[in-house]
Image 1 (tube, rainbow, N blue to C red):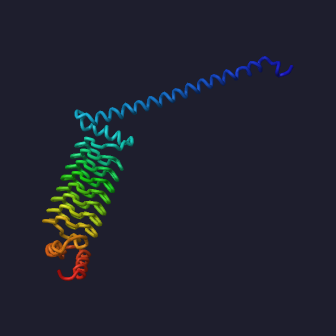
Image 2: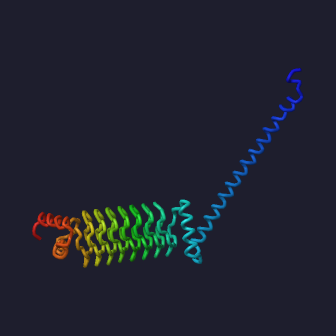
Image 3: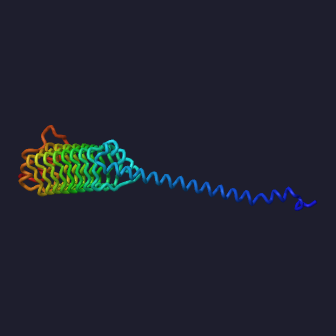
Length: 278
C-alpha cells in the first residue's frame, strides 16, 4: 500500500494549514497587544508631561511638586524654559546644557553644581540664587540680574554677561576667562581669587568691588569705573586699557607688598622697570 493511500498521513497533512492560520492569528494578536501597550505608555507619558506643565504653571502648587515636575521634564529632554517661574526651587546638580531660560525667574533658586553650559539666560532674574560651582561656560547672560548671587568656584569661561548686573555678587575663585563682562554692574562684588584672564571688562562698573588676588592678565578695562576697587595682590598691570591716571593710582596703592607671592612681586618689578618712571 502506498503512502498516499494512508488515511493518517492525509489527516496529518491537512492539519498544517490550520496550524499556520492559528499561528498567524496569534502573532497578529501579540503584535496588536504590543502596539496597544506602547500606545498606552505614550498616552500616559503625554498625560504625565501635561500634568507636570500644569503644576509648574499653577501658583498654588507646592515647591516640592514644582521641583519634581521640573526635574521630570528635564530628565525627559525638555529644554525650553523661556519666562518660566522657577523662584526658590532646588535644582542642585541638574544637567541642562544648551537650555533656554531667557527671561526666566530664578530668584533664590538653588543651581549649585548644575551644568548649564551654553544655556541661554539673557534677561533672566537670578537674584540671591545659589550658583556655587555651576557650569555656565559659553552661556548667554546678557542683561541678566544676578544681585547678591553666589558664584563661588563657578565656571563662566567665555560666557557673555554684557550689561548684566552682578551687584554684590560673591564670585570668589570663579573662572571668567575670556568672558564678556562689558558694561556689567559689579558694585561691591567680590571677585577675590577669580580668573579674569582675557575677560572684557570695558565700561564695567567696579566701584567698591574686591579683586584681591584676581588674575587680570590681558583683561580689558577700557572705560571701567575702578572707584574704591580693591586690587590687593592682583596683577592689574597685566591688564589692558588702563589710562595713565588709573595706572598711577594703582601703582601707588596696590603695588605688591612683601606679603604678596614672590612670582607676583617679580612680575611687577619686571613691568615697573620696563614701563619706566610714571
